[in-house]
Amino acid sequence: MGIDVERITELVPEMTTAFGETLYMIGIAIVIALIIGLPLGVLLFVTDKGLFWENSAIKSILGFIVNIIRSIPFIILLVAITPLTILIVGNPIGPTAASVSLSVAAIPFFARIVETSLREIDKGVVEAAIAVGATPWMIITDVLLPEAKASIIQGVTLTVISLVGYSAMAGFVGGGGIGDLAIRFGYYRYDNTIMVVTVAILILLVQLIQLIGDRVSKAVDKS
Picture (cartoon, rainbow, N blue to C red):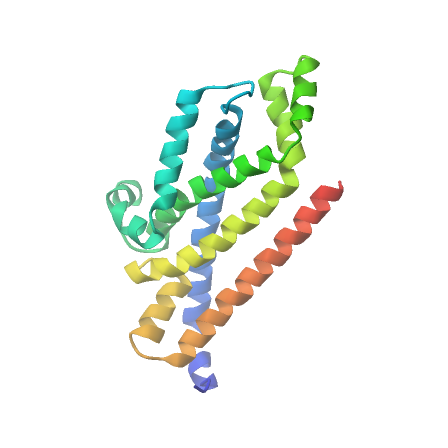
């Protein structure tokens, strides 16, 4: 299976556009995941048994919803929430439409990562904060999040990498991006060159994201 350099050159504009669409979709999804998933993960943690906002009803309901969404394969989720996508963006296809599904998948995924990160904190630290009269909000902002920041950054990295894979699957339903390019030119037209190049781009993107995430996490952990 050879690589047709001339063919790659011809499709550079298409690849550039597809790469931009992929970054656009992932960018929207990770921002939404941070805005909603971070507080959701904190809430899942602090409402657990023995903690200062213990509430079994809220914990059970939120946990149940998160588990349901996480249990649905992404390709099925893409189709299942089409009515929601149309309601929000008015169109079931394209990068903006795909970002809705990516966001829905990313929120519970990241929330569980945040919850796990917070569980790694020594309970004695939380108990000490309570003992000195810290309010719940102060404990969250001044104790929990600072203590878990390196782990949470690693969680952000893992979430972004997962979104890269999800965004490629979005190409099956016209979501745009690198996955769409691979489907339209590589799969349907049996163009092995495009398949190899798109896979190589995704691998390089994941490696770059992991590298950046690791370095930021280490830098934060030392501070």
